[in-house]
Length: 598
Image (cartoon, rainbow, N blue to C red; front, side, top):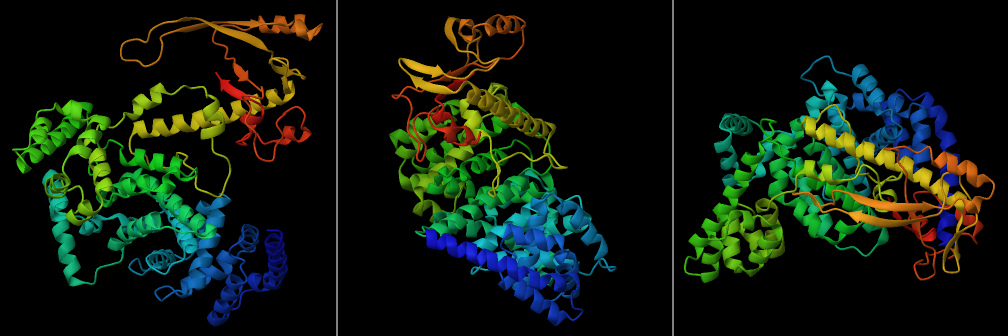
């Protein structure tokens, strides 16, 4: 490890020294196109487009505007080199990380926009080349992750007309070429106006070669499916596989939360069963994948009519789902009417079958041939060959299609405004180069309810971040230590005093609620330990009024409760370096014995 780290530092110093060789050539780029290509290849081969520090310097010197985008405009309509494409993508991603992508893109699009609207723009040429590179089966995972990151930034800026004109082609009606005819005809029956657009699309397709836009997202879904199901023993390969899956989930979540991109893409993702495939994989429990997978599932299950943007009424959505369960029961009975167990299923109330636990038990007891016939022929859940070869995927797909989904409004109402210890050191994300499962306040929202949910989630995380900083600062001041018979404090804080708490009264939950209507407790605070300062502190505490918010912390540093963390001593007070532990460090609650925050 030491030799590898030293070699990396040596290569980094060599790269930064060689950077000075290109400064003058970037500031005064050659006019000849071949010399520009040679300069781009040299910089890419030197690894300057891989490091954040060198990318920042390249962006500061105007490498994107003076060299890359100028050469892109000259090569527009022709085949772009791999070095040029990946260099532009890397610099654009670095510009987005610094928060300047919108201004930079607006300037580049305005200065290099072609006069002829039918001609391909430089951005359209870059977008097409990047998508074709991602569709190459030999594309490296690191390059695929960069392309997916660029797509995330592009679809977050659809307010720019040149971007919108190019990007929305990937999510058009042409995607439905990859849907089974049974599912496509079902959508045409529900929305007859789409049949005319589909016939017009087929007529245009027969006159000219099919564009790549119709195949990009289906091919990308297949690529991610292979990455999810593949097994790798190399640490670097596993990391880039996880990064690609994380970027894909971030991209899909953003696309599903905008109506222009959700309209036709949502049905393609449902048919591909990518949600079920990732959920069933071992990578679903990874700390960076799990939050993104939850956000992706919520975006997939968002209750909205994709073609009209209307929110269905609760009774309409319930009746539609009950009708689907009833169709499942009728199909099972038609397949094997003489089977006693299937006859029993046919007479189970639909509301009872809508429970995920009940339906899961029933599906596991059904014969495989009956389950495959019902799912593939009648309900069009999966193709017959896939349903027969992957029974676990078939069960998960049926559960997601038939079972009731949790109401997002009920989940939001059941969440406390104030964080607990699990939220403070578990759900709050910290700065990282991995994608974060944070709601984005874009220019577009599915509904007002969607906007309110995103705002509530961001407000809750922001307030929890500030509360965590206050709690961590107070805990450091009181300096908890393991003592005989419990936990002692060697420091002090004005509004953080040791106390005893006893719950005195708990009332039953109201009808339809899961939590008690009222919980009363008696808190005893002893100011005698502060000596002369105790009287002044008591007067400040007595100024607390109704609706003032205070937090109750439970700290336990007894040896039986403290689990040792690697590289950190057991006693928080005996280790001077413990004070420099970051507030968001996962070892912070363990070392200070934080058991509960209320």
